[in-house]
Image (tube, rainbow, N blue to C red; front, side, top):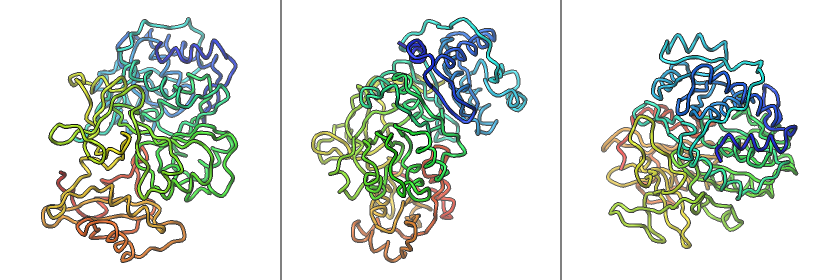
Length: 493
């Protein structure tokens, strides 16, 4: 079984059932299957062979989904790049992975060809799609399926290489966990280059359910997202917590009864402020699941929210191992952390990437760079990034802990902490987005921090900023906050 067989199988069972809907229209499984074969025929005529990399630079649409399937049917590797990405970044990614082709809208080909020249070929994505024989190149489980490019610490994107085995280990696990049916309606909030979209698309296809694409311009448009949830009768929602937070705060999500269709809400990518999660849990009886994992492992732990969790004063746990992975907290001395102890989360198992493109293959377990605390029973609490652990006047400060305390204040919607400048000049600056209609004072918030944290973790400055800036994946843009704070990044520890 490989990823593209999920659509083939669903088309054989339910050819007329809805598969994908989006801004450019809707297609059933039979039509999606035929579109994928038609695009695959184009790619084969252009010389695409097993193992070749094909960049897909396009907006969200059924045709883009069909193109991803088409690449897989050629035995090749698709490299999704969001349609809103600058052409220079598209060219950088295409060069890095040695793309055979860039598949994009006909109108965009002059832009990318002017930047990339003859380093790759170009294939228009536009229809009409002529009927073509079924394409089904032989693919082994450990062959690459797709490459997701993430921001690199050096400023150059890094290509995370995922195999069919990697993807299916996660998809099969999520399918068993969620038990979706053919009538389920999955929302797709994340860009196709973001690993959250793997669940939206492939778990839906595994079930023969439908997936409903949210266009990028609506990704953080609160009122429109709330309307989408109701109008499309979504049953499975998966996004970063920030999207749900703006829907609650600015979109009136909590002002209307929860849709009867909605039975599962999943979130990942960043901690969900506990006060906001309480509000969400009070609004819907849907299952609430916190999924955790970097792009390099997809989801490697999960936790289903319970009533007891909502009484905590910090975000809910990231939980226990998922998708057949083995996870543990490794201490600085190499030992494994026991209950109550802290360490860096390490992952080994079937979802761990094959490696970064152009670098040696991944050898052994993957060190996430995330710090966790082991809970009784073996689950994990997320503490923050190793690179968010800073030193302020000689003390180690975990920024996520400062943020969690602030977000437990009744007047605070969300908070982000950054450390700026260096050495003795290092300052801890927190940015706070207040709850709607609330005006917390600086002194009150610093007093709240002082009641819960050691003196050295109390912010030197509290600034109000609403909304907090976001990057393309919806996570808080800490680089922008440091610039806003008027300082430079500190050393990490």
